[in-house]
Amino acid sequence: MIMPAEKTPHMEIQPTLTFPVIRGLQAHREYYVAMWTLRMLRQISIFDEDELPPELRAQRTLNKARIPEICGYILDNPDDYVFSALTVSIDSNVGFDPLPGQDKLGLLRVPMDARFIINDGQHRRAAIINALEQRPDLGHETIAVVFFLDIGLERCQQMFADLNRHAIRPSRSLGLLYDHRNEKARLAKLVVMKSDVFRDIVDMEKSSLAKRSRKLFTLSAFHNACADLVEGLATGEINDDANVARTFWEAVAEQFPAWAQVRENRLPASEVREGYIHSHGIALQAIGKAGNALLKLHPKDWRKRLSALTKIEWSRNNAKLWEGRALIGGKVSKVTTNVILTTNVIKKAMGLPLDEEQQRVETAHSKKTSR
Image (tube, rainbow, N blue to C red; front, top):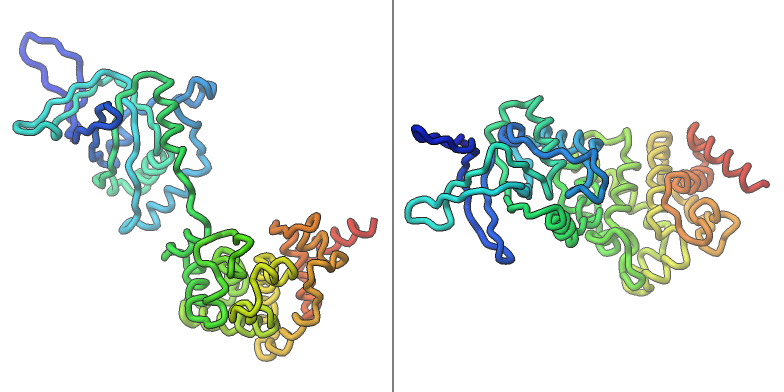
């Protein structure tokens, strides 16, 4: 709780904010940890330096496009959202009054005119304030705030650099693996874990495969492919949807004997990836897109049409087919246009019609290659 300091009779003192903290020591400097209610984040004035040039700022400018996503995360998960501590510099002299018999627990006194500069967490704070406008009842919940004493712009900028120096974003595959809210992520994981075919050839952690990796696909690539496969087909019953997807993908795997050879350690995964388009994420996603149309248009005889996959020349040496589609300059390209162009090859082989967008991209590609 923040409390204004009291005045004693006949004594004028500078108004202060007073709140309980834990005092710590880091690199020979004192810092303080407090628990603030979310409402307090709105009440405390935070210095706005967006108009300053970069060299005079202690922080990057606020990216307002990120706020709705973080705000939505709070509002959509009111019972299990989680935030790490905010890191804030106080640009003022402060006082620490230890509680009786304590040297680390006490009250921090901060002048009312002090500036609070956020070193880490400005987007979290902005999103929380936004969420409070829609859910005022969240105001009593708390967030940890770590206070450092600001000793100048240079130190503040260094703090920002140090706090972000080792902040490595986890791979997309690992993020999907640990995400239990994303229904399509849950579907992809369930398919992989229940499939004897894919369990050993999908890397659940990395989003890019090392040359010597024994895996053929990443979870992030398989997630994209599953999401496209079940678009408009998913019932919402996760186990039923996973069974449909697993049945499809295991039938697809039957068309590519090399996948089984990799799984059985009879063929190096690197050799297959280097030699064939079908063992890359772009092909997996394209098969998922084509499979979606196949299941919708041919729900009873879709298995028969899958054999068309074996009639496609998947070799990366087949530049006449793949260059400009799955390959750009001999390298696999994952951009949306290339996924669509690869999907078109598969749909044509299966005798499936192209949709309007696919036809538009195909026509543009034909004009480009005919020049």
